[in-house]
Length: 225
Image (cartoon, rainbow, N blue to C red; front, side, top):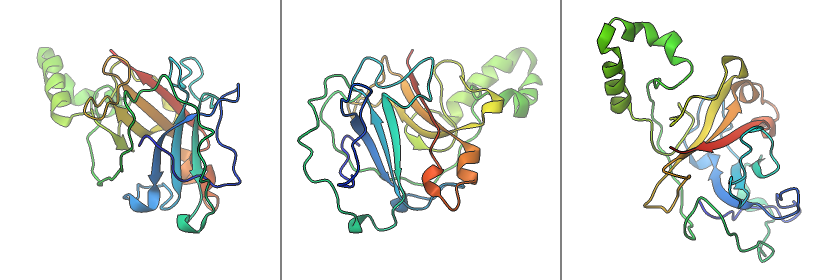
């Protein structure tokens, strides 16, 4: 997190429409992380954002990858790739969700989580269960929400929202990455907000034999209270 150190020497660095290099926010070596169902088990997955007031997000067109970018390198042996060594072309970034210069290693453990109440699928799958509580429904929902916990950073699983779930059932968007506000890291999305990257589930399911297409269509946005 905070630096991209894997970039093929013969590949152009992601830029915004004006040609300014995007900031490398996060890099994941999928071979070093637990494999999620339908995801590639190898390759380097990278997240780039623009240093502007929206941090690369398009509130009205969240899939438009011009001020943000997701890049998947379909490589099984990263050490065999000739890499870019001179990063002096990168500018001094001015406005980022990282409040200080940061370079951290990322690790992960495999876990599971229940369906949170703010997910658009909740009324269909668990809504009737809470109806049996009558007037106590909202109190029970609050207890349930606090018990399962939706805050934190994660790959896959269910997203945690501060506002309403922006997804529609027909879109088939699933959570790719959630980065939460984390004061200890100096990571902040507005006023204690959270950022999400979504991918289309059918894209990974049909990726073989070309895993590079697994994350070709991505929805990115962040929200705060």
